[in-house]
Image 1 (cartoon, one colour):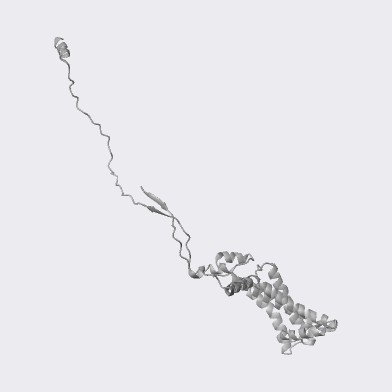
Image 2 (tube, helix red, strand yellow):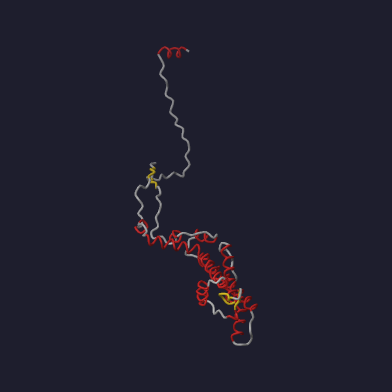
Length: 260
């Protein structure tokens, strides 16, 4: 039997798109995507923290006589809050940058997102019906006050705003994280994201390879051997018997026999 082990020596064809080097712009876009994929929750938390810090800094800057800094910040915050004087807190006689309700909303959103980030984005979140229940108190307080049915106070504004902010953050952020963990990412990237780690760009591209490359594998050439059919009949041992040949005797021996 002739069996020959041979190894594949020819190069494996690869796609030109994979072999071609990426341009600097494409590398920059990939790195930016990796950064946003890993730190999107951190960016939201920092943005909310800056907003709350700016609102708190306004009265302190005004108290120190730094109106050139406090007034632009106060006017910029007007894009996210009506800043009604009767609905706002005052520190050292100067109005806070946000009203009581909006300040409690953004402050609670900052605290909720900070908890989400510190949990490495593993916070399970709240179901949709709990989210609706947390929104209803502020809706009731705001609508009844808007239609003149009653007048709210700062305690209700703070409580309802805090429930509204925590409900939004703890429902939306885990939902966003869940959407990032779903396919088309490969299982390795899914597990890494679930553990709060980083998923690089190549892990996303590996889910849709442009040209799958097969690794070099040795192969064996086997020379076929003719099949020999064996007889199914039992084989009996045979014994070869040869007839006894008379031996030749000498004349003297023959004479002795005759004498006897």
